[in-house]
Image (cartoon, rainbow, N blue to C red; front, side, top):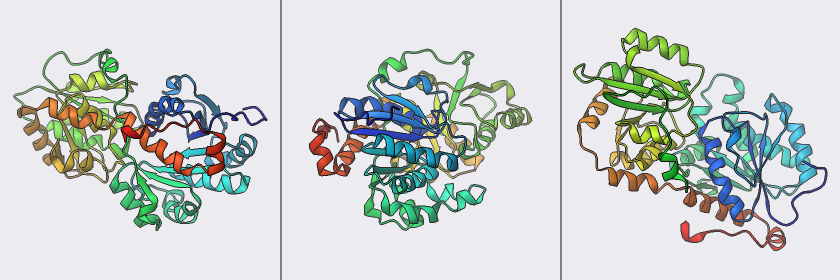
Length: 390
């Protein structure tokens, strides 16, 4: 960015992320950016590190700026300098430590930037991760969040958990469900499925990073328990550090020939539409974007009843089976029953498509409008909030 304030005609929004890897938060905000721009916001993606599979998906009209920081603490002084130099009206952050860092940087910088923090996973589960920095997050939240202009959670469960663990008043936390369905949804459905897609038999699909949170091991064990008289393939779309471990488990369970791991796919919708079933086996979630996308494709789903999000999307089992976390036998039973039960695909599509990017964007824009101070609104009268889509 230049040394002069570049935002004089429109409210400026900085979306602060570690990078543009293929995670749910990154996909969400890239999808929301066109609606933010259309509403009159000047949008910048601010990254600690410039990289990630989705770097090429930044929409026209948004800029990308990198702090060039390999570690979060190294990003703090650079973020302070950027806030002082560019003085954005709004900064939206999306990860626990970045939420704390954004509030702190704003204090140190002495600017009037309004910090909007968003919580995309269960805080109590994030605090269980190894290392003091994760265990300290609830305490850091208690110290930092009172200075945030607004707090967003992606589900009611995440909001309730955050209020308990961070001692935040529940009415300070606004729930805005993630937007899964974009305006180009139908076009995206028409793209090709991954190379090597099984040409016969039933296909179970999982979409997500190959990390412990997603608990693909339970899904593999569930598939191995399915009746042997029906050939059932399992496709794992995603990449991550547990790939070798999962490949080894597939061999151990005797399903290696039916286990397909084509890697990360920027557009998983054609695969979802072609699959017989989409399964989410996570230990915890904040929302469960994959479930909404699969339903919108008309594809049946099975999910763990993990904290939090899936039960809200599936309305406690009305739109897909919910099973206990980490129980292969229960998951195998739900998969088998779902595969043998005819699905009302129009009903599934209607539920999935209710989680639209337009509805999500309208929620954020309404929040931004409330957060902006009266003098900023007076200087920037062009922010257009599509209230009819709320």
